[in-house]
Length: 179
Image 1 (spheres, rainbow, N blue to C red):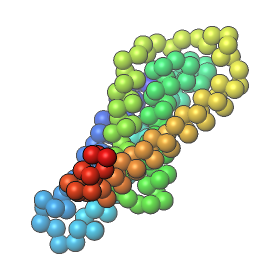
Image 2: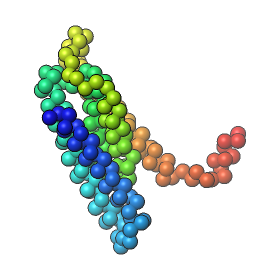
Image 3: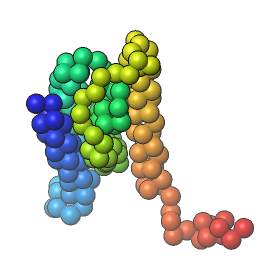
Image 4: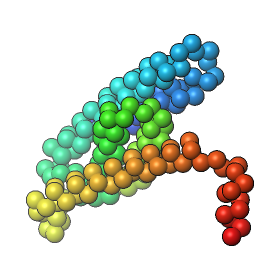
């Protein structure tokens, strides 16, 4: 059941990304009378799908925890899927604060790629090695992943800012490269 939940989350995240992309690109390609309302509508659809995907991802996490008997962050597959879940959580928090639809176009691919990358590692549940049998595993790994997730969303926001505000055809930029 846990693997199916992760697959569903991956698919729903991909659909949410599609919703955000439609919201951003559709306002120019479709005849829209009120572009702001159009973007908000598709942003809400994308956010709703992202939250549904996050709930499926949390289901994966907690069922795997119940199956393993320890927090599922002890191998690379588990950590990467957890990191993907934390990136989505960080995106949801930042989106709810700033309501910037375009952030979904930059942040969700990071989470999708992390989850896809996790699939290359072995999926078997393994017992904890003695060095990891400590309550610090829960504290350290979860806070580290949450911090990395907010940095990933910050990376996406910074990239978004650069794409929107930097004039890549500017002659000033060419002059700086020559110096």
